[in-house]
Image (cartoon, rainbow, N blue to C red):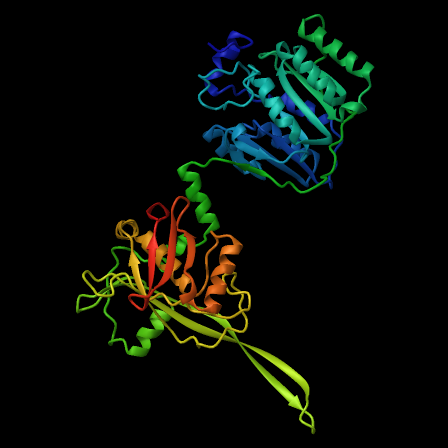
Length: 491
């Protein structure tokens, strides 16, 4: 059973430890602050309830006050929404709050012991502290800026040595009063946050001694009352608040956020094809020009079957390249006096087709259709290009798949595309990112000196745990090149 301060408090535990601040105490708290009508201040109540007390305090002190609140209970959060500038309906310990961001921390935390029966409102944060008052205090104090003011409302029976030490080491100008409503034996503590080394040792000891006497019942603080001599002033904002958000969303809240953000979800049907959409025939048959344009634009991709039974995996793309031309200006004697290099953008279509027709003579072969010139590419921006910036196509000859690669591509369409992409890179002289530079240079030298002199080898990562090896060799008895695609464990 939850250990609470009195039987009357236990009666209220069904409300998740919710004990709203009474109006008389709220009005008295307001009178202890210097009103700053035109000063921008930021107020945090991490247990805001219905926001009656926090909103009265914040907006009574400044017209430029911004009230931030957190409330776990859905009903109370809905009531508090209209009073807060920013409200999170969340477990406090499922939130992220920027440190040193608030000038006033109004903290009237839940009262009671932390148990597993606390309706899930408290997470596993700081299980070393059994009391909810201590847990809420430790979590929220970092959000208060230096010279910011703390208003803490707790039962006096919780002002033990641990909590007294925390307050005495972090706050100065401390005042303590008894709340107007005596039902829960509450006390109201004011304090201004400072760095620990700015508090004199004697001041700390005096505060601890006073707190100890109150805790043991030797003295009773004066009841808080409206005063004409306010002693606390909330500081101006030092910086913008960077973080004030919750980590988890309910389904309903996620839906609301998606509607606010918009993005592509509101136009889902416009950007994404539906599986059950009605297929409409084009008004007229596509011409060869339309077909080639659609292929080059990448609109026709994936598995394509012809009327004759042939099956291909098609991937269309268009990439930007550059062509280089040199213009020379000569003088009367025929010498060059000016040389101008011109780089021109050009868009190169590249359509790849991988033959997957059963029993086809070219089964597994990759066909490339492109209008790229056979001349060297004068400006190469790809890491896979040769050191001398020449563009060389590897002579692959006959292409063979090992049993492991064939099984992989037959069972996984994504792997089939990855293998196709790796082979395409290989044919361009891109040796992948899974090889040492020395091996890449060896391949480049073989291409320059002639493939018949040595074999080519490249390695590509298909996924985190799968690699593909590609080897091209010249076979004298066939008088032809042969390229083998294999998995490393098949070598």
